[in-house]
Image 1 (cartoon, rainbow, N blue to C red):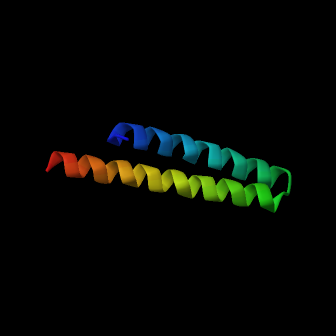
Image 2 (cartoon, rainbow, N blue to C red; image 1 turned 180 degrees about the horizontal axis):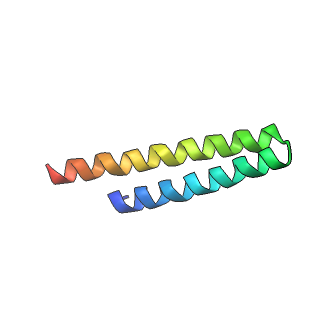
Length: 59
């Protein structure tokens, strides 16, 4: 997977995670909030992976 695809998936997962976290807060559901936190963290890692791939390609 390329740099841009990793970054795009990272942004998507981060947005979905934030939405889940907000829903978990609104519904007082710690399980949904935890899912959102995990998905947001996954998105952060995917974006970082894309950044690394981009840095390697620019060298």
